[in-house]
Length: 137
Image (cartoon, rainbow, N blue to C red; front, top):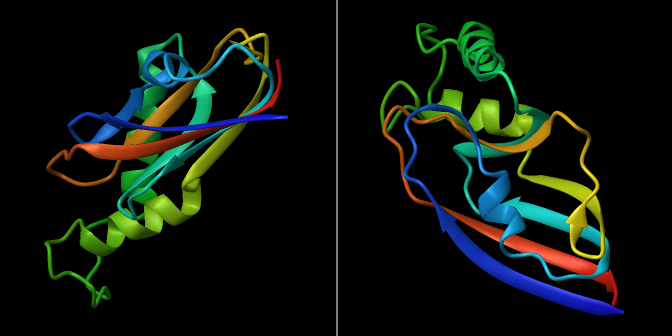
């Protein structure tokens, strides 16, 4: 069993959904196994979804902003602004990690799948990501 772990930094990206597939794939070894991608933040998240049509990313952003609106007044955790608690909620809904299989270092993602960094803050930040790969040579 081979285990490889590396950290990368991405961004800063503006608020929205951003394909980071190439940045992640540049850090995986040529093994056959599984990759876990984990973001070390509570106001951004990761997901795997449609990567060909950019309107999908726009629709995600629109939907999440309606589902978890900054216009609501019941949030108590707003120290860093109106996007503070809403960013944490969106991050919890989508999650802090994604997994996918690899064969010989090649991701076995679907034809239209890509890895998204979901930036939920109004001001983008550099985000730290841990990529752990495990499998066989």
